[in-house]
Image 1 (cartoon, rainbow, N blue to C red):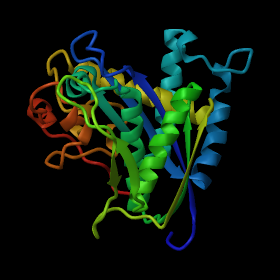
Image 2: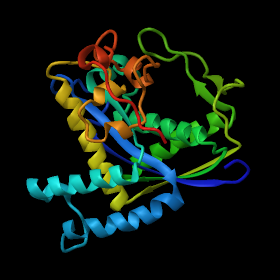
Image 3: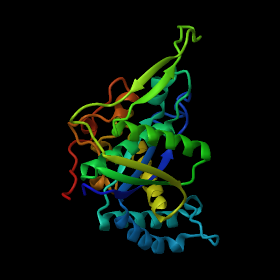
Amino acid sequence: MNGYVRKMILVIDESGAKGYSSNREADPGELGVMAGFIYPDFELEPLERILESRLAPFRAIDGKLHVSELSSERQHELREIIYDMFRQTRIRWIYSAAYVQGFHEALSSAKRAESLHEKLFQDILAHALARAHQIGVTDLNLEVRTDHVDSGVLKRFEGISDLLKDLLLRKERKYKKKPYSNDGTSHGPAHELALKIEGKNLIHFNSISIEINASTSALTVAADILANSVLHNLRGKQGKHLGIALNQRGALSGHPLEKQALVSEEGELYSALDLLYSRNPQPQRPSEQFGAVSGIPPE
């Protein structure tokens, strides 16, 4: 794959909480999830055509697929179609999850409220870029497909994409920051700060372009079903295991597609989301509650 530009598509959707750091959890263990999958365009495009035909019976007269308006039986049928498609094609998928309360406690003192939705996007995009690099891509043309979002959110997603792109291309980004006293008042001129990643062993790309398209398709419906299923699975753990680390394989136990998830294994490093936005002082290892879990099948 080296030596030429690889076109890849990242399809994502979110489920659950996506508010701001000023918000406390509405109920114990409330969380937000973003899930999706990244593959070369030539692999996803034929899959999209097949999936589109299978989803046709679920569309309304206007041609749109309103999952929430389907009966519970039809929703179950739709989920099974998506799950079967993942199993048959052995699609590997990714997700990012964080607790509302952990997010609030970590960032509630910030000058400006932070968006959980944007943090989840940043994490899953970083995960996808790492995945592309892992399979040998060094010149990447990435299209991000997501369900409809408003123009303000789309613009902020684009800003996050530009930041990650610049960091991975070793470009220096400069910021201006005003000094603040303890009472929150600013004083003195703004200082210029520079941010740049260096290191021989870090992920490196020769070139990256990222385009974000917000529209509904058969693939975004699949990402919607996937994100909702992850939310349901993780929320179901909170009754007996409130505050478990969310982004570890053990936390996915019982998910119908757990074996195909690209997620940290037991004993590996915790994800940044689990460390920064833990609901407990220290994240619990999922295996402490659920025991051994099966691994990912070979490629």
